Image 1 (cartoon, rainbow, N blue to C red):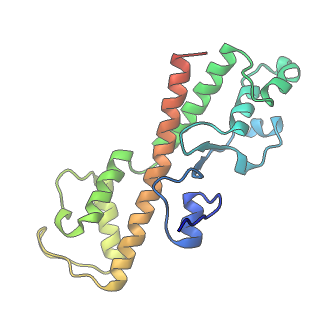
Image 2: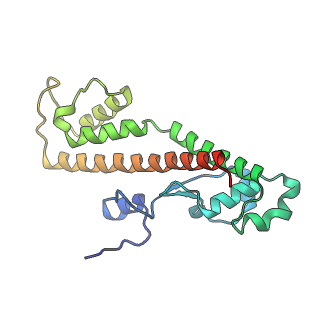
Image 3: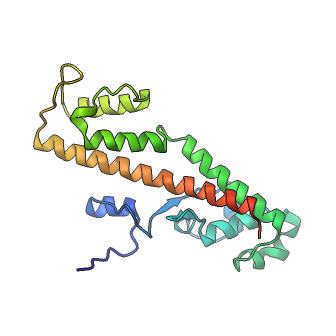
Length: 204
């Protein structure tokens, strides 16, 4: 049986159905434009994103290409930008650098890294055995502590087994979904940086 959930992103799947897909071709990382960029296009905000494979959307790329063009030349090249074509090699490099820098800034603003999220997912999968693992960063320790306190879970020594209620198990499941979503979001941004870098290193 093949089920279709339309074009929902993972965040929308979480909101409406309570789950997400590890491989969701409709997943996106939305990007906010600089204030002066909005006057250059009429694209809705929902069109400005990085695709699941790390590639900028048509709307995002065409807008950044036009923004990277000197103001005196924008009118003459606007039709090129919004037809999806490169304006020039120099312009393309500037567009790729802006998008990559935007993704780096978004990743830097996150409280955990991709690798830390992967570690956290392993901890959640084997919750009882990984409490107090020495390789944990302070941020992950704080996240675990906050979860335990919010769900009124207590433990003695580091090796103490946790005996949790059904309610807490459900909370752990929701916690795992949240970590999975943020890990996938960061993965998209990271893949976009790799894509932009490859375009800069190998211009057509």
